[in-house]
Length: 105
Image (tube, rainbow, N blue to C red; front, side):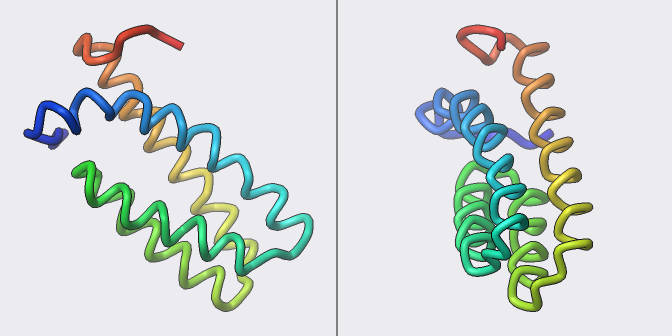
């Protein structure tokens, strides 16, 4: 896994991951209320912030999610939401196993 080299960014990474693990759960509300524009906004933020933290694969997933939001393809978006969550959980486990977190969840 490629981690950020900047020590300040690396210090912020555990909180970043925990925040996204919470925020990605907003997907259900967006789908229930058919709020594709809100999903697009979240995916756009995911894209940009993940690239800044060196999590390029998650940034790419943000781009893909933006595409699904534009066309309101909730089925494909739901599958991708699970992939995003799983990937954040993998990053979280990596941080825990390498003692990069201040506290475990």
